[in-house]
Amino acid sequence: MSAFRTSKKCRISYIVFSILLAFIVLIGYFCYQLSLHLDEVCRSESKLLAVEIINTAVKETLDQNMTGELIRETKDEKGNVTALSLDPVVTNRINNTISQAVTEKIRENENKAFKVPIGTLSGIPFLSGRGFDLELRLNQIGLVTTSLRSEFESCGINQTRYKVFVEIKVDLNAIMSVNKAKISVQHQYLIGEKVIVGDVPQSYFSL
Image (cartoon, one colour):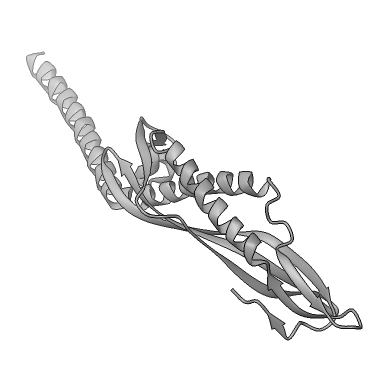
């Protein structure tokens, strides 16, 4: 009877030891994955948040209908478009207003803590969105720069679409309790377009 009890205790001890060992291995693997993916996921999550903030600022600005008569066109006596240009006054207003709006929106969110589940930071798919939250904050560390870019795009028989984009770039610090990374966010938005019927103008203001 004594030998049976001893054997039973040994089996229980072995089971407990195996469970503890498996738990330690699992924790070790989780920490290893976390160290591998922390910086990558932190940057990814930060860029998503930054783009969301920039989207809001740009939308609020463009909703004010400030683009006005951005695209100017010159026509010949037959009514054909011979040249395209961008109004410099409207161009400067767009650049300055959007840059200021993005800066203000980022500053509004600098003290706001965004929650990122630690399971997401681990990089393990089935743990994504699980676990306790870590705080993520974004701090602007450079000026917001904006520039306008234009391009032609074929959109049908004898038709060409002239598009104008505003490109925005901002440098940020992504700060977490366990990590800190510098990120650069670049995004572009369509702010004007015009469909031209006929030949593409030989002269246009290229940005």
